Image 1 (cartoon, rainbow, N blue to C red):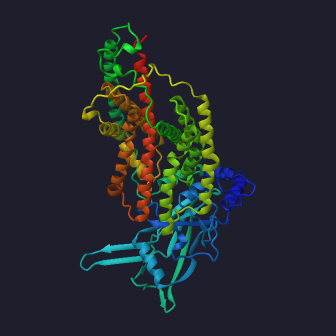
Image 2: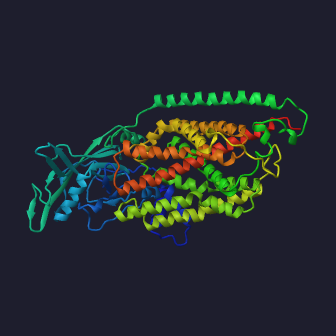
Image 3: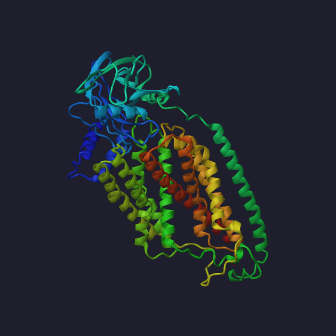
Amino acid sequence: MPGVVMTARLECLGLRVAGRSVTLCVLVLCLMPYFGWAVSYKQGDPVVLYVNKVGPYHNPQETYHYYTLPVCRPKEVRHKALSLGEVLDGDRMAESLYNIRFKENADRLTLCKLTLSEKEVDQLREAIEELYYFEFVLDDIPIWGFVGYMEESGFLPHSHKVGLWTHLDLNIEYNGDSVIFANVSVKDVKPEPLEEGGAIHGAGVGSGGLSITHTYSVRWFETTLPHSRRAERLRDYSFFPKTLEIHWLSIINSLVLVVLLLGFVIIILMRVLKNDFARYNVEEDGGCDDLDQGDNGWKIIHTDVFRFPPYKSLLCAVLGVGAQFLTLATGIIVMALLGMFNVHRHGAINSAAIVLYALTSCVSGYCSCSFYTQIQGQRWVWNIILTSALFSAPLFFTWSVVNSVHWWSGSTQALPATTVLLLLGAWVLVGFPLTVIGGIVGKNRAGNFQAPCRTRNIARQIPQQPWYKHTAVHMAIGGFLPFSAISVELYYIFATAWGREHYTLYGILLCVFAILLSVGACISVALTYFLLSGEDYRWWWRSVLSTGSTGIFIFVYSLFYYHNRSNMSGLVQSVEFFGYSLLTAFVFSLMLGTVSFWASLAFIRYIYRSLKMD
């Protein structure tokens, strides 16, 4: 099986897809990260070390190919075939000149000798001053280190020293015939100091340029850790700062607050509704059309509360795409709980997200077109197109801007043409057709709307509402409360997505996700009740916007995180951060808007069915 998958992957990435389905290639490339078989070595077998990327330490998404720096490279650069997730993650692995033999130590081997021009020395100096780090990959194990050394000291006189690491010690741990862990160190190694203007101490300087010799050593260490648990060894390694800790206390605190909030809302609503039912059902005689005589409150608008809203197609598209992302998010969390994502499987979450997004397109088509048919929508073809484009169009626009900036800067985050074609093929051949199929099935299986009361032809006039029942106030309340339930966990998620952390507390994430949806549903029900009590029956869009506004709070938090919790800077990193933060906020708005709408609809159906309207 591994050999078949590897062959298919090479064919897909090489665009040799004649006579083969693009869909098959997409699935193969996406599923590659999950075939984590162990590689066995014998004494003296070559162990390939791939060079991958470099970039500023504080800008995780600003990465460049390792060979863009004036470093040792082979005459012919041969790249490793990558999975789709690895490409999306900015990986560009290429073979290196390091000669490593399994369980064979080596001391101060010469990697290469370079003659650098003044421009190349200045390029290295600038990279070191920007705290460039490099990433190598050995047997799917990432290895990190800094390109050079910088020291600032004193005020008067001021000292600014920049040095290049020209020797690396490779430390590799093994168990039996498998590689378990690897890292690099520069302990007891002095950097070569670089002078501004291209001068260098300790290296030969001639009219032809600067002469530098790069060397390396290899040390093998035996360990008892089995190959199946080698991810634990990498997780405990701390090249990047460790800020994620077990945060049960914070989660318990949020959980207690949420339980108190939900209990308060449910108890108050049930007591109020009980009094309303007792008052409204005093007169058991009289028809449904006579209930509004001499009364007020939510009962009086029973002939208008199920009046269909404007922009029905857009509303149904929001509900469909929201249901799709609820399914996708649940699937990602479940896959994480099953252990399908770990630090050795490069781009596994990216691959899973692409596959699930394509496959769950049928959910969006079905939910959108089914409800659109129920509320008497006629342009179901347009509804399917709108549903398919509601998220994919903003995604494509954002990606185009971000990818253009990466391409302009020469970053490895810029997707190659082959990957763009594969992603486009996944949407054209899988995502969009499944949306159409789901829409057709939803249209044919849609039943009646099931409204407890019939709607009059003439709409009732809505009385003027107090300021605290306006849409902006409801959005502020409905957005802040769900955001407060996830604010603690949101920091850890941002630190993982935009930092150097590896998130492993997926059980807590599932609890927080459930809490978020529960709070959104309860707050929406409460706000909908207050809206109806003021004889305002325009609850359809209000229910979506009330808790859907949580996305606004999440984007505001991203601004706070960028300025106060991170050291990100520069055009490349900023464009990517704010572009995809906007998309993230939009996704949360769709999910929570969908949950709040269905919760409000179920609540309204319940209270109007409970009235005695014979």
